[in-house]
Length: 327
Image (cartoon, rainbow, N blue to C red; front, top):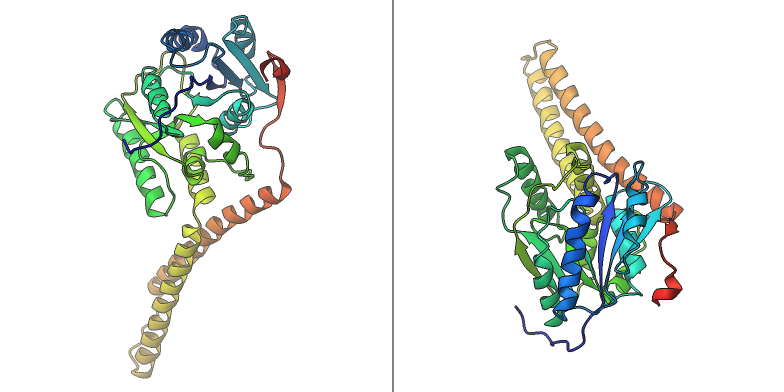
């Protein structure tokens, strides 16, 4: 670790857990999260007022009812979004809710796949002076080939496009209240936290852990959603695809100019042969390039349209607590 200033105060921690249709997994993992929280409190790593903050992303099953029942414990609180707004907005809602109430937050999915013992290392790193601590998977051996290949290709592509992301890091991380208050100044509607957090700067480090299989239930992130998240991340953090389109357009234009010169020369030499193959190939190639470029540009225009509306990124409809009681 780099040399940073040690902290002497015991921080109040909020473990932020996004939930969407998790009625099967919550009864299994909730005792594990609570056990870890109480263990950290017992060893004086975090303050007694630390808690678990569940964020319901407009679930259609009994998830909110389960959260309300869990909130009978003094160390558990919950908030509910007015409708489903997606994983990234749900995590953000929890972080923004906690930023003025707690010293640090750790965001983690509720499926039990992330190693809870990594929290000890995260808190230790914070006490050593770090403001952000990333949870990074040490390997992807438990993933099938398709998921491993696409995930690693995504991180490499993001780096190639100039986006600052931590390789093999998802949304398991510790963030200090200081950093969260700065992140609150980022007003964009299209959220990709894996890229936004590094943009905030501050001292950071990583802890490495092995991911487990899901404790119960089914994943709510199929391939389609993963690809959507990847594309959102790319278009939210990097303008390089637009630059690539410009370069591609120049290249195709240059090739077309060479082709025109070649055709004129052949015509003047009387060597032209009428046929449809070359015409179809050229038309298809240029048409495909144009459609691809138009689609990418359209994505950026669509995001600009959403940003100009400045709609709220999340709306909290219910809480299991009164904020004034925690302030």
